[in-house]
Length: 373
Image (cartoon, rainbow, N blue to C red; front, side, top):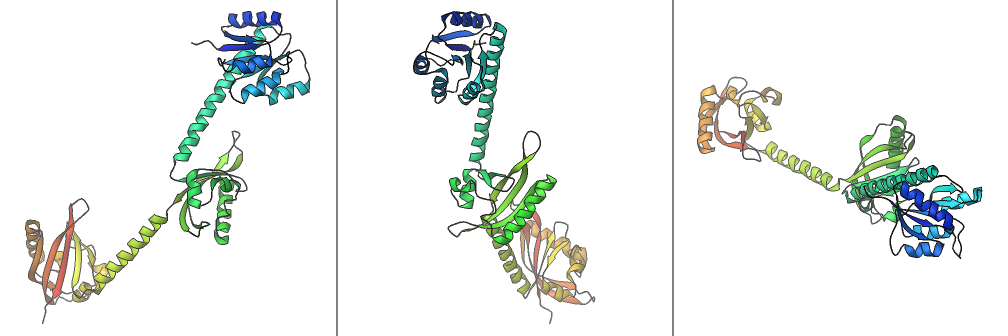
């Protein structure tokens, strides 16, 4: 394992030798040894140590605290301060300078070793945490869905680029806004109630649909997932959620409904009777005209075998299916149907096979024209 290098910034030569001997015996590598704050700062251009032992009161214009601040502006290095002075003001200044430890002279070799090891360990954990946070933020920023975090009151504390794009507000302005600021008053009331329910129960809301208007007047249909955000102690600190822009999906769904209704109207307006069956010959759909021709209600026909309504029953059904399987269609076939009252009617049948998207045959389509005099 690579030895951690320690830089010593101290102007007491006796203490310098003690530090060097103790650190080497403890398995550390001695880096540069300098005696002033200025030298400590310029030494960073030569080689970066893993840790710095920094005396607070140094000769020269720059003391240890100032040197530490200058170094940590450009380098993430743990610094342990050495001093002979024990006062609260000095300790607070050391904290503000980014201290990872504070050794009061004189100290023994065990305390020195433990302090250095603890500082290195803490720094290593902080680096891992920072890397994990950066990785987490990177993943969040790459999401196509909007992601946000807010405090308990609903004020946004974080939002990714997608959230800004979906809402239509720059991210710099989005931070600090309330999550109800881009909702109409009625939707805002509903959102307030939903957020309260999430807070009270701790149960996430997986779908909350609402319409949002951006500043440029665009109307967007959004789907919001909301969950509670807690600290390590389990205390609620706010909310976090994912926002999906479902505008295009909603438009497609509406268009599909319109198209389906349009086609349904065409079928319902047909002067010929139309039916579809599954591969077992059971009626799946029948138009109003066919129901009128045969004198049945929809519920009486659906699910029954179509051969039930043929005068020659299964024999007609077998012949029709054989011809469909051989040729794929029937252009004209004269035959008779039986009405619900038992009266036969003469019809001309046109039929074809029904197939799904993969080309698999899933049923039949039949069109019946009443030619009874």
